[in-house]
Image 1 (cartoon, rainbow, N blue to C red):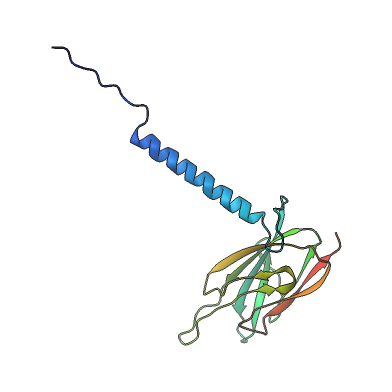
Image 2 (cartoon, rainbow, N blue to C red):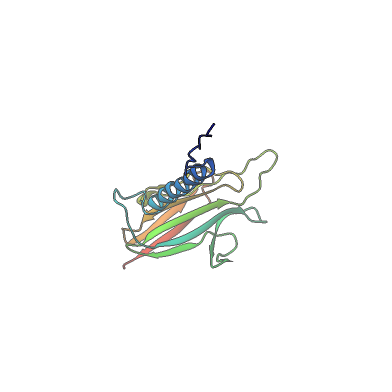
Length: 162
């Protein structure tokens, strides 16, 4: 009696799973790439390097709420005030906000940031939550940014002619 040889498939379960994982990584990378080139104040994609602006919502020891501006790992701010941020016209700006104010027992910490002229509005962020938002600095001038929860948290963004 002759045994029948089974034909082995080149598609093993491990290869199918690996293909699915690689495909998932490609799709997620594409999603985040497209999202980073899609400013909230423009209907078109802007394929250009972005300027990163990092802001932290905090409460100082003297009780003032303010934003801290970080660049190159160093905090750039004057105690008790919110920084003036300068960018150039035509730049794609990625604004990263993180809430670093710890919650109090009777007062949960929430912060947000808004720049009305550029349609920038983040969600209310709890302790250690963050949000990034991309916008195109397409208008020259001085514009206010602020937190709707804490009116004293405000500053100026200056857009200089390119």
